[in-house]
Image (cartoon, rainbow, N blue to C red):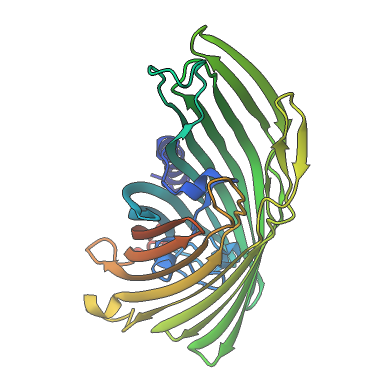
Length: 444
């Protein structure tokens, strides 16, 4: 099979498998109901063992999607293919009430190769946001019966339920070019697609009162661009410091949003619907990220990342009236800040024994969340998130391949707001295939 046919077959496989894979929700967080949903960590399996750090990392045997400028460092003889999945258990706590939930998610496909000298190519499919949560609560309200003091009078209860589903997914292709020694620039061009769906139901036990439904539905098909650069300063032959930066311009996501107001009369079975439409209901923020990475030979490296997302200035089309009047307001979001630090150690990646080649990883991070909520249920502001991870990279050694790596990471995430607290234990599994596709055979 030629290299071209291999590439076509692999790309076709990725897109066919992703059609079913990304239809599943990978979150049950109540905070995913708002905005664009929960933002997903887009790092690969190796980086997740270091809690997502990687803006300044450059590796010949990994595809670092966090910074497309790093594609220029890919080994010229190999084709790299990385897949990942996660298993997680989340403990939710609100006051004295606790609940546990388990989620399994097949997450990403990333691949890359060296197109020519100093020019690398990367492509793949990764998640961007995720939504998937539902809950309801019941309370007693004032009776609507005609004779409230009648002995046959029964109490009236109001049941309010919220549910959400959907999220955004990203298919990308990117290039990384090293025009001069130690300086690389890169670009990821992505296609974003997905759906944002929410529903609010208010129903009553008294049949004299109409039940009401509010359904928001928006399909999104848009683009995303990420510009990047990396510069490496050498300290002798085996030590270096790399600085990396990425800039992702924000823009309106586009797509028509439908909002249905439905009033349903139980006695007459009559349903009245008012539909509102709006364009550009949501926007994507501008993001700037900078990272530093120090490498000491082949034994260890450490990285520090900081990212900023400008959410606070983004308007949201707020449906103020059932007659379809739309008002674009700001003040729904907070700016998001995130800082990560992580590192990796390997005894001797060029050693002969299996133990010498194992990579040990760890990392921690803190981030503020972009949500800014002022709702009747008491959530006053966006939650904050702290997390920590440990992981290993296990070499795959056989008669055909000694360059591939199985990446395993364990991550703890604590997310808390003014009402709901979440503690998540996540197992991240990534498999990096590093195949020698482009070697020239020599015959004697």
